[in-house]
Length: 488
Picture 1 (cartoon, rainbow, N blue to C red):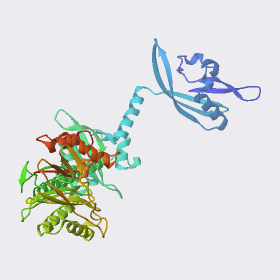
Picture 2: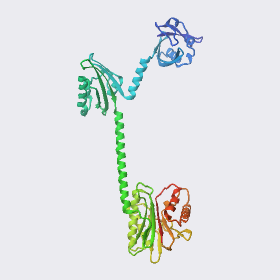
Picture 3: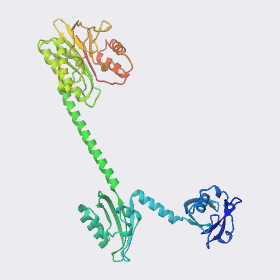
Picture 4: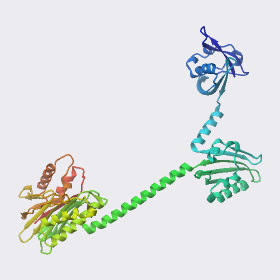
């Protein structure tokens, strides 16, 4: 303790503080003892002090009468070894001067502060109980966990079960009895009832010190608030259950897609022979895990010996696109079997899309052809679809047609058939736009790239595979791919 008195300047302002008296045995931060301190100037003894928060606190306490209190760090050097010390400083006005106390926060105090911080962060508090002297001590954090008024003092373990939820009460009571009677360690989580509050999850961990006869004489333990941890576990469990449900849904969709694949679009054998034609197919859905997309094909022999060839593309991907694809594929096949002219088939499919409520807003493109083996004549029609590509005699060109709008776009479409005589050695490709489209370039560039690839592999025994490989190798796929290669 130090008594400081102000030293005033010519204008009455405080220019310094002088040590008037000190308590016995005092040693200042510079190592000076009590005998040499009285009469010393603060500014002269501790140079630079006037630029510190401490000095401003002293002056404010003198001027206002409001006590100043702060913790300060001071770096000292003993035997050439730097050491950082911490002090608690209090200054209060007294008889025109200041009574100042300097308290060094020793290692024990720092450890107590660290322990209190760890308890607060970990939401846990310690308990000591001397069974011989009937002494019980709680740390501050235990009062916080139990929301108990400190004026009531700590609660005994015998009372603990009465504050547990009904479902946990007997288990807590039994564990406490074994601890107190036999000294068996206690480690149990239970739900703590709090008035007007949701139950709090608490863990109790206790060990006993026993006498020579094995009777407990002292208990050491802790309580930990696990409420936040339990809530996190609950949320994680919900997320895991949701993830498992999602995985189950995906597995079911994959299984359904596999069955649809077998039913709707069985993968063809290579070099399928039908009515004098060889038909190869490449089918690559964008969603490889599902195995199906909005693209589809048909290559079937009709009852009169002619061959129906179809490639179509439904806007979108996934099971919704598959449903629309199935509707169009089987309806088109049914009408073709009855001998319905191809333009009428497309008109009817367009009407079907427009007037099927669950397919409202769906659109599709399509190219259909019927090959008559007796005349080698191919009659074809398209709805918003890329034109067929014919490779003949070292040249590649796209078949001209009057075109036709895509299905589902208008209630008054017009479709017109075109005719081609298919010759031995011809390569005819029906394909979807996933084979040619590339972001950032025109459709004409994609068509030209297809024509170049087809010409480059016209003499290859693996014409279709080689051409498709070249077309998809240098770009990122963004759509399904379906290609029919037809040759005599």
